[in-house]
Image 1 (cartoon, rainbow, N blue to C red):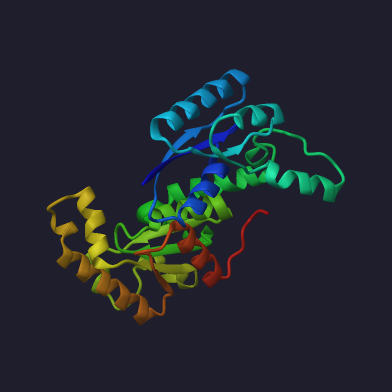
Image 2: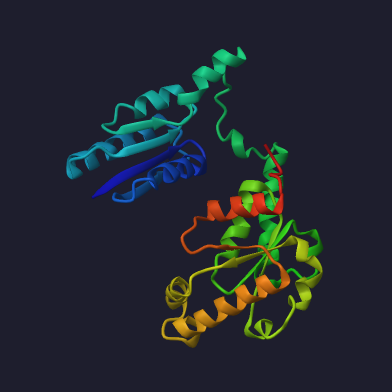
Length: 271
């Protein structure tokens, strides 16, 4: 069973897509095809979108699902003429907030990521830090990191660092464990002084082999035997030196990040 999902926004659509995917992830028996329509801010664009939704409805025989964050009420009403199940992620809450706060919303587009907001620069700085110190490149900057993720290659370190930067404003670095590191009794030298910032990531060897096979099929790097060896030795290292670690095998990036933030006693850098 497949359903078409439209993400409609007058800005980037990241907020709407995040909410949509989080909600629809609860329905594992259904396959969803996502269609994103960011920067939809004219009547002509909305008319075209209504036509597109109607065409899909006629072709598939079931209503598409629409998640929208249009600040303009005229465009929003226009979109709702399409034959779809609509979730207006702004209007669902703005009415009650307006009554409670005693003032109308501004209707300003893209307010969440405005460059006039210090939160925006906090996010960008944290993401830049994650990229600059990715894959063991942060030796000169580890003292500035809020957290350092350690684990075998392809255990989910980089996407988690980027998520921590974008959604929490935290400076996250990562250090990939190599075969030489498994022979030591202590942490690798570049990160040894920052044990209190380190959080380990592990993964089931079979799943790791699947991920690595997509990158280097038929290689020793992707073999189940190599993956089993690396995961076993990494977990032994974590336990030996007393490093907190988390299994990423069936966890989402959101779950991994939230676990790290809670376990490390970190705080989101913006409201």
